[in-house]
Image 1 (cartoon, rainbow, N blue to C red):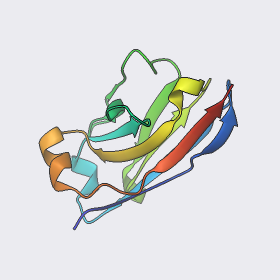
Image 2: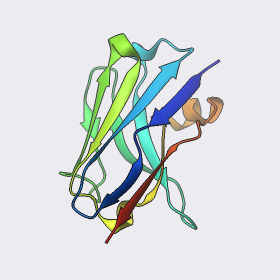
Image 3: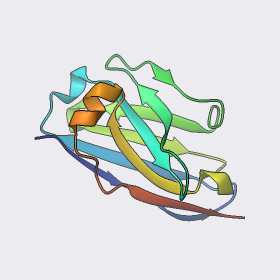
Length: 118
């Protein structure tokens, strides 16, 4: 059974930084592409960063240049470094498989709340 535990969120002023962590268990972590997603109140969940098993990364334009995803396979952990945060980054952040079909079969963790004040 896959378990995902996110941490590192908090309240930060605009322009500040946070580093999120995602600890995964129950999977062969190193072979799976992982993504960070976020969901703001009243909005659909969106993917904000993706990292392949080989370390290739992808970002939407909304966070490109500000967010950096990385992984430590020895620790079964994926990180999201978020810099120059904006109020519109406020959301609950989750990690899950980058592949939608795979993510549908995993239980979503509780996520971690990121709140950016202006």
